[in-house]
Amino acid sequence: MHLPFPENVAQRNRLAELLVLAAQVEHDVLCQYLFAGATLKQNYGEGGVTYGQLEQMRRWKSTIMAVARQEMEHLGIVTNLLTAIGEAPHFDRPEFPAPASILPIDQESRLARFSERTILRFVCFEMPAELPDQEDAAYLRACIPDFDPNSYDAIYRLYAEVKRLLEAIEPPDLFIGPPSAQFVSAWPAVAARGRTPGKGAAPGSIYGFSLPEISDTKSATQAVDQVVEEGEGAGEHTPTSHFARFLAIHRELVATRASDPGFEPARAVVDDPRTSDLPGATTITNPATIRVSELFDLGYAVMMQLLIRMFAHTDESEEEVAVLESLAFFPLMTTVIRPLSEILTQLPAFGSNQPERAGPSYTFPKRIDLLPHRKAAWRNLGLQFALLERRGFAVADDLDNPEPVRPRLRLVAEQLSRIRLTFENAIGVEVTS
View 1 (cartoon, rainbow, N blue to C red):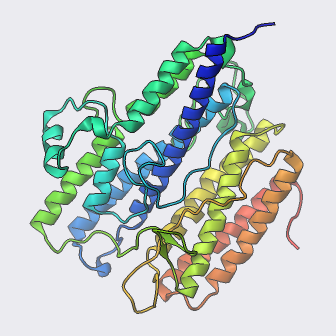
View 2 (view 1 turned 90 degrees about the vertical axis):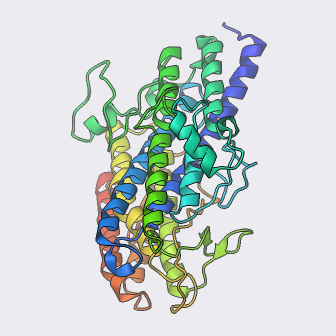
């Protein structure tokens, strides 16, 4: 029987703690990016924008959504790393707002509308350890008093230590999780089409995701390199990195506002909206908006349950995991969560005649955790989909909501009905009364 050296066990424990932190960071920044993107105006009638500026804003939103999708991918990679070393997936994170001391990101975590300040915070999240481009360094020195990139590279340093530990620990003491428990992008998408990939099939892309199988030191460190290169860059000027993309948006935003002082790309969305009191957050008081926000919170909770089950599946078949995947990413994420987040930024936060708008809270439900028993877990998901459908139609029928958003709320409700039927057909059990 192989007995690991005590120092390897201590290093394993440290690695697991760092990966949990990394999962929290990826989930945290992901929500902030999605929130900011949802606050951008979408039509000329909202005021403060020209038609040309709307096209520029469309490109900004597309970039933010693309970065957010990669953050989802990074969360998946970190989850597979945890699984590979025999640890449990981790999807919990601090509530918004959270001070900089809570997570290793050197910045406060808060849900804030699109602005120069918000985008600059995102630039700092994705800051590399060094800035090889002197123009970038000069620009940031002009934007940030006493700027020092080493003061904003906490995420980079987090992954650097993860990689160092992956390389230091003996593989037999490290990669003890079953490979079949990982969610790898090669096989679920294929299984969803009724086929099984051949042995050694290369990872493909699910909805733009690339989740490689992690089985040894090489594949683990390559996965970490993928996260770092897509986020902070590869140690040189990388135009496609998250850092470079956000910095480009900030430059364009500053230039556009300088040429047009009346330019206002974002709706008047409050910071950190919630339906219940929390220190530092903004409590929504409009009754109709609260009902829409609660529908979003329930949809987000169900999506998290799907993701937890997908990444921590037990005795599910490949086809069953493919069902979880297809419901979590599309249509739930794309046709329910995203439209509701955008609708909320059009709804009054307080009185119907007041200018402040609401927004998605991304409130993390306290009771969400892995349900260990497959049959009960799937039954529970079915009940949640049934509740979502009922609440979706109740919100769609609510005449207290502004008339412009009602057709889209109706579409969300109809989509929730289709999702519930799809899930019932997949599990072969009717869960409606």
